[in-house]
Image (cartoon, rainbow, N blue to C red; front, side, top):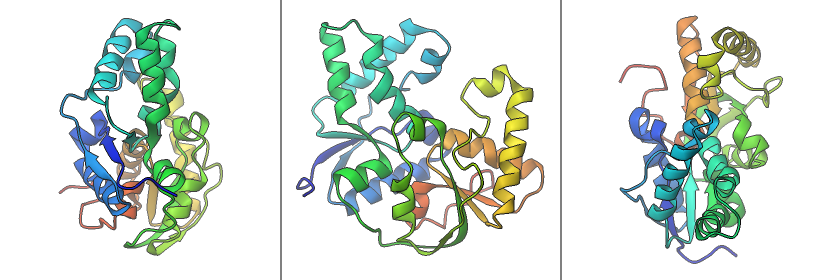
Length: 254
């Protein structure tokens, strides 16, 4: 049985905060509908993943300590992002020397941290959501969510309960879209070729909406779809599960 009104801290993520606040509001709605008491600590900052992936361990460690402090006392920490969730769950403990207080606190946060759809289905035992969203949709599995956190069936299970959503699986849904954080900056030619192949698989489904759980991947794919003149709309899974079709799709003007 799920906990009775657990106190949940929402880790908003930098991209959601700066580019797509509607994802954060959708996440709050979904968590509250599931029976959670939700708080958004103002002291939270970047999870430190860009620094960590670039080899800047010192700044990654400093950012991790700030996040650990900001989310003390919460029963659970929920993240609408597989990549930020993967950083906090898998890599925070690696930043600190085993046996130290910082390492123990990093492990504690790791155990309490969940990606959004995983938390709803695994912890809160949500079987379906009360939402409507007309869409012929296809789902992209982001690398971190799938490989670091094992998230695959959770978003699909919840999407299947949304009235109006018809899910069409693309070929190689689990293959990288070419974003990879700093990868697309360091290797733009390789990244673009990967993205072109991903877009061919998306278009082959006949879907009118692309859904994923990581805003970085979504912005990468939405930007390319926009540049090539595609009519496919791009949405974060939280928005669809919350029935938010009033917010314009990613990469479209307000």
